Length: 156
Image 1 (cartoon, rainbow, N blue to C red):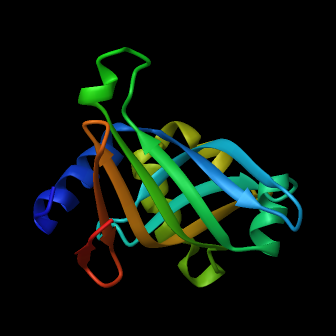
Image 2: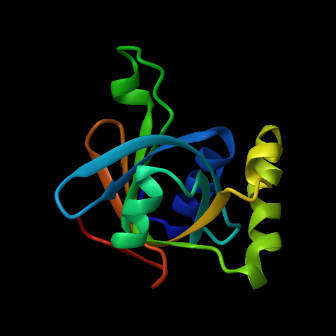
Image 3: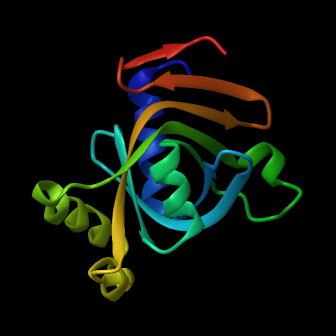
């Protein structure tokens, strides 16, 4: 996938159909992964997740904002090796500030309306991931890297 418009369209479609991602965070001495519900901004430059503030992932995000997410459409079938797509998202995460909270919550709940009670709880933080790049793997070994902030495809 070397056409940037086609790649962005494929990412938007994947993000619209998949409700969950695996979020990787890092503390000083260990990595932590967890399943999260997510939503993508229209321009693909940001992703949103929610988490209670009293979690290891939130503590890790405060300590080290570098994160990675994995979004994929595999279904645990042998045919996935040729038919699925997996996207590694790399970026920096921070809690959405109060002046942008409602806009972020609106994006999140448009995708995840069943998470309304959770997303509006005062104990829940909405986290914005500013995406640096997408590593897209299709057909098992077809790798494309999109530097989204620079709006360019680079060689893997």
